[in-house]
Amino acid sequence: MQVCFPVYDLAEILHRIERYEAGDLVAAAPTDWTTVGRSRRTAMESAIRSTVRDLFELGRFPAEDVISQEDIEERERRLDRITSPVSDEEARLLVGCFGVDDCYGLAWTSSSQVSSPIRPAAAARTGGRRNVRW
Image 1 (spheres, one colour):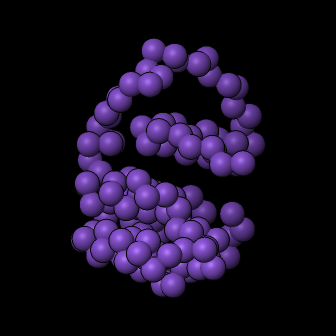
Image 2 (cartoon, one colour):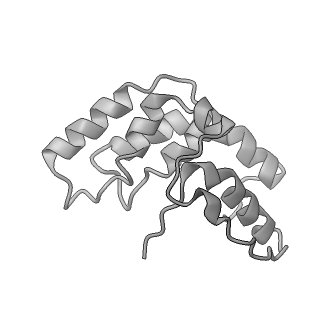
């Protein structure tokens, strides 16, 4: 099953995952139905460049055995338009594009865009230790 959340919920989802990983069970929040079906732009969303959003909107990279040549070329064009450095929010969106395999090098190219902002955050999260199992 695949569940899709609006990009403006990303910060809250990541916060809840971090609390859960720390052993703090997070109670479900009440549902806010006032924004269902409506666009709600946040400061985080507006800080994300359109080039990153364009790639993210295509969804996860499909598996190599099912992706078409046209889809590879379109994703490659959109990926090439993203310039470094990317913000933490943009890196989180790019990580959301990773699929089940390398997708003919697209995942590798995308991971090089992501690696610089994520590394300091990961080091802070693990206390600088290496080989920490996520």
